[in-house]
Image (cartoon, rainbow, N blue to C red):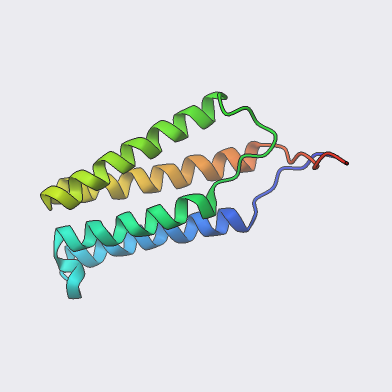
Length: 123
């Protein structure tokens, strides 16, 4: 039996994307400490760093499959842009980090929705 499923991991990914968008909106509106591009970048980087392993779901797939490689490349790009955003405090880097996090969420959720669930092997 194979079914297409979204799980709690997808909910965690949705929360990460929503929080990233909230941090960016707070930065633009200059709310509290998030009005600083650098502190907003640190916060968003931390959200993504914690949320990535919570939202990742690789079950029964080769790590060399095209979607996994593409999402991994986007993840590396997010890591690099996150560091650039923290070091420079540039709002363009913060915006790029936000976009990458949302694209990662959309790509991972789409991949999860289209991937058939594989039962665990019996021992």
